[in-house]
Length: 190
Length: 211
Image (cartoon, rainbow over the protein chains, first blue to last red):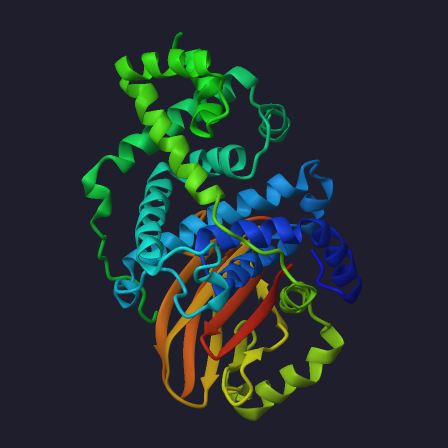
């Protein structure tokens, strides 16, 4: 893989049609314009490293969104284990673009943030593959036929996997243990 | 009504799109089936995520992200030389590369274009790659991310191709040593991303096979 000037144009052309979808998906997950941009940046870095593969895949948007969901779950894990971030809600409460756009009262926003945090923690527990498959279908609106072509799995298998994953998600959300933060010290200089 | 039929209709049920008789049939099943009741709770949660307000990315955001992802190697050559010459040339040995990050540009918040370097890896031995990170002041909570691709690995981390952690960077030179090994004939690439609320650096190291 070469990182040459011509690659820049090639990569930009590849990414442009999908950028809005990526950026909006990132906003849903991070609830912050700055964090959404960082998340999309991570996706672009990874996509750039695999630009040859990206050019070949038929469903580029699904391929890119899958990377985005995987990366988001990784970031969630890192944050949950970081003592620095334990006090943070994950939302950028100072970002005017993300406050009360739909007329919600602050209390409603706080409640929604808590609910979303719980959902994202549950998605983390479900794992990369299950979470991203469910998100592609239920959030991004990919049809079963599109998912069949993306994953190569038969439609019947996809249906049962999606149903099982939804049920697992529902069970996790009804489990109070998921609301407890995980505190693990990581990092440090090598 | 059975679980398979409910599975097909559950998203429409959660969105209130079913006809009254279909809705009654689904709810009657869900009332006696814990799996489907859980699945309904699950799909409703995903719809909460889906229905959050979002805005499309502006051209400015798109250009900013693209500028961080690509770089012009000719433009970076002089910068690379400066940093190596400014204090790290003594650290370079035949099989050891000192890569310098300049994270001291806090007077101008933003992102510097990626810098680049080469490092020769071998299938016969693990080679220590030194990364020197220079900060002009204490940087608390800097995030360091390593992304590997190709036929290379960091010794001791097996198949993991992404590492990420946070650390405080001291003023001056902070050295990170990564034991790198080739596991095939293609060589590879390492992207090192160093981010801090006020600054970000991306460094690309081409990992070439030492023949």
